[in-house]
Image 1 (cartoon, rainbow, N blue to C red):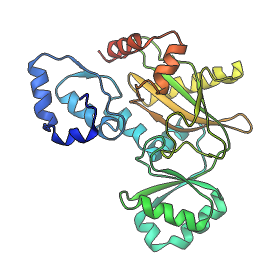
Image 2 (cartoon, rainbow, N blue to C red):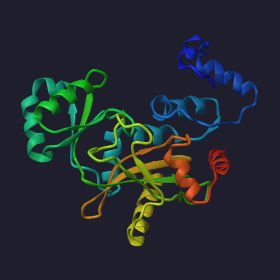
Image 3 (cartoon, one colour):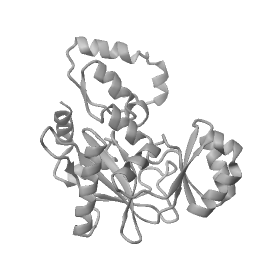
Length: 286
């Protein structure tokens, strides 16, 4: 809803999603444009409900959404298809409670400080932080365990942060890789986190990449999009380390579609205006 005061949302009547979809089905709605970024909109839940009503939709299907929404599962699949991910460890809440010293020793030995701590179900910037020492690591893991049973601890990769959007392919057509974007953080910032607001960073599009490197990145992202079944569109985030090697962090299957979002920016630099981008995504979904 278009409201000036977010507080007005509390006065709106909430509806059960099944009831809403039953109504849309009776009205012969054939396709749903999914703009629910994160959560149930991106983890396969909405896709499962829509599939029951035989409604085409943008975003990924159940399998693609579930795999890509969990950073742990994403890491496992990336390794399975031969793509690099940061050195890391999955910490279970039960193990943390019983063997904390062993976990900390393993992080110190294999990952080192500073390290990155992530909520596996968080977004690109939500639930992501830097731990500079053991005390900070303990604090950040304990925060994640308030709402989750798993935490992901990764080696901090220093390099250029690149985002590569991709449009899915219709039947018989390969996915289309769009122009790469480089995220340049303000001085003193080490990671893109939800503490940063739009405007605090610079998005350079197209990113300046060596042609051979860009060819390899495009091939790998297309392979990822196909094998993980990422649906109508994806936006994959990676770091080019100091040796110019790509290290993959995550992918999004419901990328933001606001005026500040990277997918529309990349599409426009690829010759696809906003309305045409929406039209293409709907056509792919159908």
